Length: 322
Image (cartoon, rainbow, N blue to C red):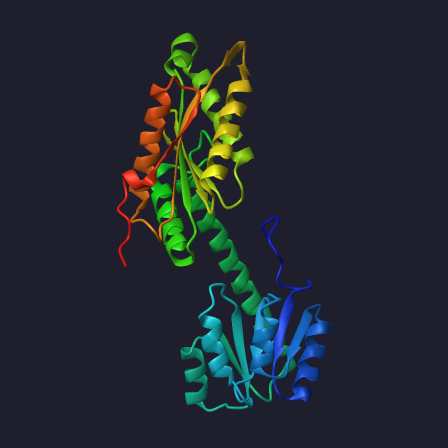
């Protein structure tokens, strides 16, 4: 067993049982608890779905024939959820066509009543082992995606993924009438960092700037290394005033920071351009919003650097017509 991964046997795994027969619930519940599992019970599919709002079982044992919502109908709803949960049908319907239908509808296994207790427990253990393998695979895929999306040097997103994320926020802004802000930031006179020091120090500076950004963004915000010494920060649901205050806080933090490593020490500044737009009011896409913030950055550079400039999105985006 790999370290840090859950074991499927002899641990407190939560198993949900859904059956309108209280005797079955009592019997199976006693078996599961004797094996060390935690048990959650529901006497109808409706009750089970309500409990799933606040609980996350590792496995569901589900009867097919129940008054109200059937087991098959509940399974359809379960398979429509984003998070996958394993399901074993436990049913008195033992004809081959019933078993085939249950599996084809999306059940992970099918046990016919009456059942052998040892067989039921073995099938529970089997499904939990499969779930753990799926969880490992999902974690590995998530890690691979992070390696693709994250810039190794700064710990921020890279440009391969940032536009998709920003486009998603713009679509959310359209649906819920919320603003989306973008900050483009460029380090001032960064060329002198590499000219006056070695390139390792320049990499250190960029890594520290990435750390400063990560320490100041909210959980809903996201940031990327746009390229070289340029950075992009996306601020969903942020007013123009809020985006400006955030940008100036980043600017002041960089200005006051003493970049020191291996005998090299330097003070630096940054210029920032801010654009905030309401996707439901103006025609806007991710690249257009970034382009507007980049124009504001251009204004900051020409205003003497080490400052924040705002840009009016109406100069770039047409107002929507009804």
